[in-house]
Length: 261
Image (cartoon, rainbow, N blue to C red):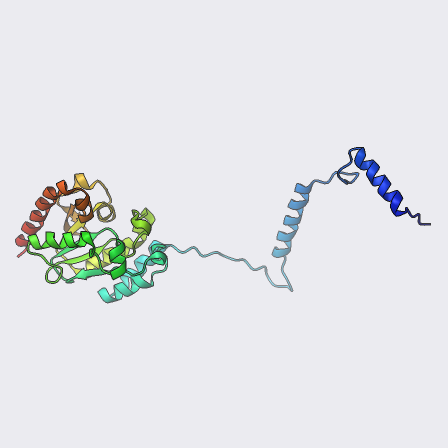
């Protein structure tokens, strides 16, 4: 036989319990919620592993993409500079691409005896899609002219990175590493006889070391070619006193090119 408690009686009982300090309803036996969660997880995993309809359980294998390996494959597959530029434009793994307006590939005359390798595009370069077109580029043009060079006739110019880093920050090591295969292929296809490594980031990429103040003016080897580091024109705009050292480096380049004739 069922017993019923009227509404007023039930409310009076609840109010009495509240006055006695009862503020939570619990079971007579404690429940380990952590153990219950682990048990539920184990049951779910067992269910996923259980063959359905006589079929073997499906194993999902995650394929990890190596961006550097992908860059090597794409770069080596390019038979010429136009194909290399297209391969760089299609390369999806460098995050700098997402924030850049244009890919900055190169400027000047491919096949020139000297190739200048800068660091990364700035704002003006990003807008125009060409390396060294801002104030630093104007200074570079004057530097080239001083030793009988011109990007319109006998000099070729590119950068380590084809996309502008946000706020002109230094490129990250992983960004340099994934774009280096493209630069190496670029040098191989352009076939310069002398490399001029412009700035610290370029030294890091091609020489594996930094410290442009110590490295500048010293001939070495990069990609199997004579190479000389020098200050970046942007640095010279901030530090005009360093132009004297850069003039000496330019004379070294001029002498090297004359020796190749």
